[in-house]
Amino acid sequence: MSTGKNTKGYETPNHPYQGERIAEESDLLSRYGLKNKEEFWRAQSELRNMRREARRLLGEAQGDVEAAQDAGAEFVTRLRRIGILGDNDDISAVLSLDVTDLLERRLQTVVYRQGFASSTQQARQFIVHGHITVDGARVTRPSVKVDVDDEGAIAFDETSPLADDLHPERAESQE
Image (cartoon, rainbow, N blue to C red; front, side, top):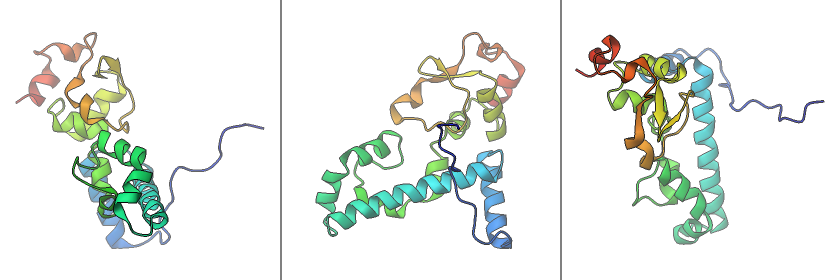
């Protein structure tokens, strides 16, 4: 028997055929360059878990935001480090987060927003093909959450053909 965990890292929607939800998901998939709905559902589940943790901490503190903040200091620090919460936000701000807040912190989106690629799909391709480094380390997973401190350390790998300023794909994306 394998020792790894055997559960999915996401939940699928309860009602599979809702036109409005499907259209909304499809819009976000194309806007953020996600490969499939599983990636979107994974982000939704991650957000759900964050909200659940915030509710648990607030509940244990009986609604006292300061006490919950102290109890969940590591949790809040982690969310601030990856840029999901601002420096002035407290733990109750977690409850008002949207799935787009998580999708904006993915390496794929950050690479696109910084102008390394002309589309989110191209950003995904650059990452998967090993052209992008974060703080000098090659990263090949587009779903990695980028720390706020590491945003400035994103660059093309020096061994990549894209490191040349005159590369045709790069010239296109730098305009």
